[in-house]
Length: 290
Image 1 (cartoon, rainbow, N blue to C red):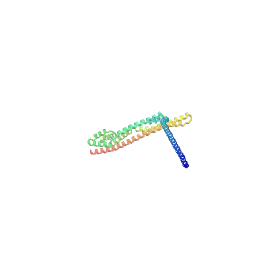
Image 2: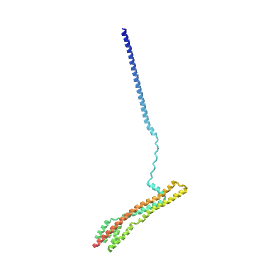
Image 3: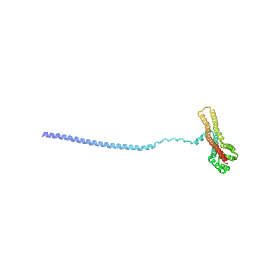
C-alpha cells in the first residue's frame, strides 16, 4: 500500500513536472510568436517608412533637377555672306585701285556680252540659204536669188548678195568680191576684241600697282612706328595683295569670255568660207545652163 502510494506520488510529481514543462513551453512558444509578430510588424513599418522616404526622394528629385540652373549656351558666330565678304575686301583694298579694277571688269564684260549677242545674231543656216539661192536662181534668176539674200540676216547672206550682184561680170570678179567682202565681215565680227584684250592686260597691272603702293605705305608705317611689328607688317601686306588678287580674278573672267568669242568668230568665218565656195559652184552651174 505504501509502495502504491509512493508510486502514485512519484507519478503525480512527474505529471506535475511534465505539465509545468508543457505550460512553460507553450508560454515560451506564445511569447516567441508574439515577439516574431511584433518584429514582423516593426519590419513592415520600417519597410513602409523606407518606401515612403524613397518615394519622397524620387518625387523631390525632379524639383531639385528643375532648380539646377543650366549654363547659358554660347552664341554661335554669325556667318557673313559672300556679298559682305567681297564688300569688306573691296574696302580693305582701297577704293582707288579697287574701283579702277572694278571698272575694267564692268567695261570688259559689257563689250564681251555685246559681242556674244552680235555673234549669236550673225549665225545663219547656210544649208537652207544655199538651197533657197539655188532654187531662186533656177526659177527667177539673179534678182530672185538677191531677194533671198536681202531678206536673210547675217554675214553669209551679205557675202552672197555681193557675189550675186557681180555675177554678170564673170566668176573671177565674183570670187574676188566674195573674198574682199568676207574680209570686211570678219573685221565686223572681231570688232571690240582689242578692247577686251586691253582690259585683260590692264586689270592685273592695276592690281600690281596697287600692291606696290600698298607695300610702300606699309613700310612707311613701319618707319613711323620705329619698330617692326609683325601685326603691322602682315596687315599692310595682306591689304596690299588684295588688289593683285582682284586684278588676276578680273583678268581670268575676261579671258574666258575672250576665248569663247574668238572660238565663235572662227566658227562663223569657216562657215563663211565653205558657203562662199558653194556659192561659186552654184553660179558656175547656173552659167553653164545659160
